[in-house]
Length: 198
Image (cartoon, rainbow, N blue to C red; front, side):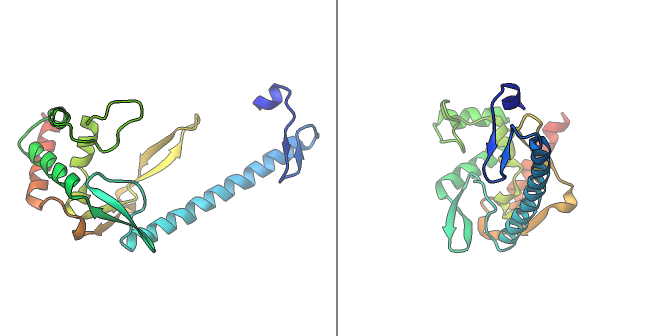
């Protein structure tokens, strides 16, 4: 629409469409609909492939602080990163003691401990949101939950997460990924719940 408004002629080689042709608008609409259906089907196939990887004990993508992604012949497996695992354990212990999320972030930053994902153009630093997400992630007790969210695009094109119903979640036990024990996990979850209520 912007090109048309600007008076720019558009030629689509693979579809054989010339915007100067009077049928161009109809052809663009039809191709757009077919392409949209193709993308939806491709998304379903990709999801099924990722589900198969997860069921096979492989990672479905992304990085989690405390683990390294190791390339194997059939996919990527997560392995505990000992240095990061020590930081994870410390975060949980501080949280169990009642330290606030901002207080934990301040402590880690004061000790110059590398954060999970330094942002481009910013000084690497821990933030309370990253710590909150870590404290709620059951992978640290060896439980993988996949398919909690689906990602959609806003009309402006930004990718955002939307939660799926819990019935669609995929849960797997992965004891080899355990970093903290159940007792520490439960203490932290009780502390977080108490802080949400007060």
